[in-house]
Each structure stands twice: as structure tokens, then as C-alpha cells.
Image (cartoon, rainbow, N blue to C red; front, top):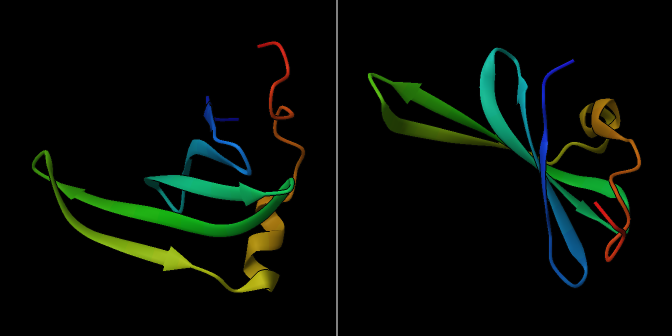
Length: 72
């Protein structure tokens, strides 16, 4: 399982992870994955960003990130 980093705002959380062989971010709102962003990096440069919003495909990211305000 890849290492993830978490960022929390008032109503949302981002989880940094790898999927489909590339770095990405998953956006959670109220503990539900609502978007996944896959970053295409070539020669150290970001050359593209793909956004996944399909609820059926986002089901792969459904988990419980640390609660907002919870001790890390």
C-alpha cells in the first residue's frame, strides 16, 4: 500500500497517493471520495492532469481518512 499524506480543511480532506501508476490526489468531502486527480509527470514536469468524478470508479477510494481535527 502506498504511503499517503493527508491535508485537512474545514469541510474537505486531500489524500496524496499513487493510482494507475502515477501520482495523484483524492479529494474527500464528509469522508466520501468525490474526485481523484491523476498527475502526468514527464521529465520532472507536469504535462497533464486527469480528473476522475465517476462515482463507480471512485468507490475504489472509499475509506475513512482521519477525521477533521483528529490528532495525527
